[in-house]
Length: 82
Image (cartoon, rainbow, N blue to C red; front, side, top):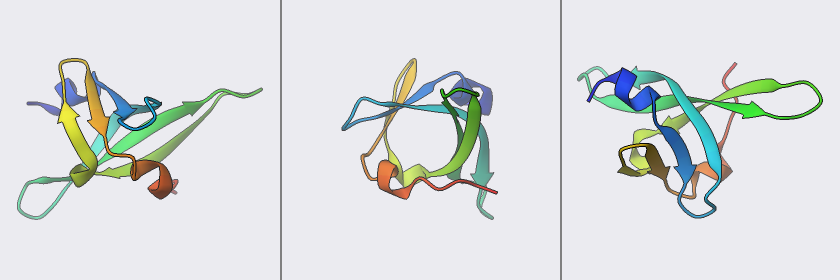
């Protein structure tokens, strides 16, 4: 699977069903394995804003045709990347 294939899939929290965002980049370890995904989420407020956070590869529960399901612990670990 290519990065471009992953970027076309929406990320969904398994426990809540909440849409978390789309993949914009990956972090690769020294062995060439994907360590984590950089996800962009759009916040709808008076002014649209975007946030990025890192999603650990181990949090992925299932990669489907259109979506990527992730475990609930993501919601407690969301942290903005500066």
